Amino acid sequence: MEMVIHEMPTVTIISVAHRAELEAFHSRKITLERREGGAKLVSDIDLVQRKRKRNLLLRVLENRRSL
Image (cartoon, rainbow, N blue to C red):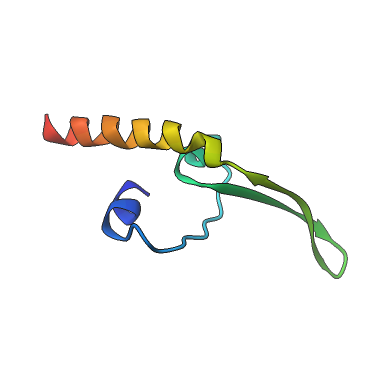
């Protein structure tokens, strides 16, 4: 995720994950529930307030690379 964000900063990425740690790299969290005949949107949460956390995480990862 770090490489994708760094190399393509203007691209919209849709990822499917089950690890909460990856939320730091996302601006929205959409939850779908399997239903007969298809899927149903259960929630659509704006994670923009976590961008600061993401920026901090990216800085930590960049510092780690430079060591």
